[in-house]
Image 1 (spheres, rainbow, N blue to C red):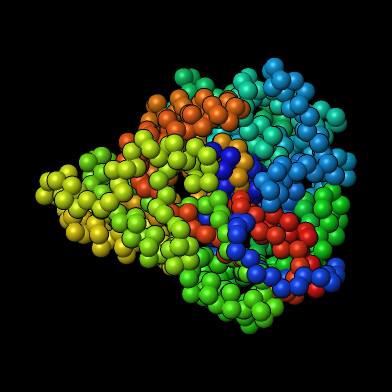
Image 2 (cartoon, rainbow, N blue to C red):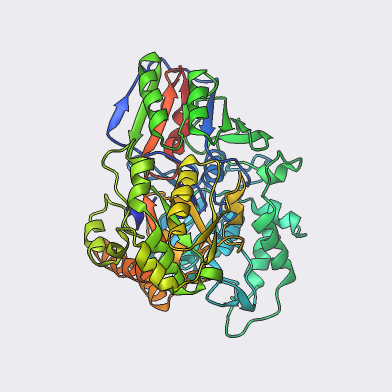
Length: 595
């Protein structure tokens, strides 16, 4: 339940979906501020982000990067959002959702009249119907092996989150002249309030047309006629649904400004009006937007700057107004020094963590080899050399499912098995290898200096036990290679929205799209089945403690550390309020203003 959940903001259509972190920040104890009075409406602001944009659909496994989620958040809206206190805030200007019944759990979503896409088409129940189809897995009848490969049947939508919650719903009912959609669950669902409809970010009418259907209503009609998938009796793939799913899966992926406006339709305060690949993206005010918090700035320019020192330089040279670089001691010192020069600086905890995951295929299919490799990882050394210069109290992260600020973290780490990997054990690793010298390719983002440093430390330590570690570091598109089998281990981060428990099965359930290393454990799956239907937080914690132990005993990989967050901004802008979850400073972008 990572913080009752944070790696990758209210960003995706499912609020409880984890996203890959670049380095987003969250609130904490250190703060130095300049005056922030005298804001006026209009103008522009420049924001520096670590990762480069590559998809207008952040709901897929490949599109779920933090920057994609932030852009979706600024250009779309929905029934609620998460504020800086991790509270759920309803947006009744967009519409409302009502619990019609507790038994069975029944929720009705109604979109207000006048809410529309930037091409003038209405945002309505057809958009919700498509979102439900993609996020529920309702039509899938595939049988998969433990590595997530389809053995038989059909797997349509590549949703990056966990489908188990909405999979408990029946075929939705559309009502109120196409403005409402009612979901009826067959079981309770702990995350029902944040698992659907915020934001509504994939236009059904655009997907329908690209799939050869007449309009959004025709798409909903198709979804009503295709039967629920049954893995015990797979059927011939529905050709029309296959076209719909294929476009949903890949049709919104781009690093350039599309000539086809249907790819980047907005129903939020801003519209994307320009992209320079791997360099910048421009957001301009959506003048028709009236169904949510009104934005103050006329435009926002997002610059993609992976290097922390380059972000600091951009802020110093007034080439950026807001930065959230990866934490580094040198840049923190520079930012603190700039505090008296019209810059506000915040350093604090964030709901993200870096980790090393081992594939359960290839060289690491043998658990002895996995265990041997993990015994060589110098986690304390990583913390000492990468994090402690910035956060003197930092320690290696000892849980796969809790963060240190959670009450049950201490209870879990007593018996979860993490104690076996506190110290480097080269001799123990050698005994497990029994003379073998396995080759291991590690993938990570070369642009992220923390992860590049982690790779070097891990490589040097593993070599002492006989491992031949190959540098599999990649550039800006590193995240698109997750799960593709091109590497044996990966160093990356997850960033949580701060609410819900659905992110846990997103990572660890057998066959999940975001289960990149193909972990599969029947007992773990059963615990996660219980987790998502349990709304008692004490019982959730008990289930998570059991799950934590199973993951550690499987030699899944290692959590490395929880990096501190860093945010700095010029006194020329106001309204900047970092938060612990995925959206970071973006959570209230509509309040940003030019002084």
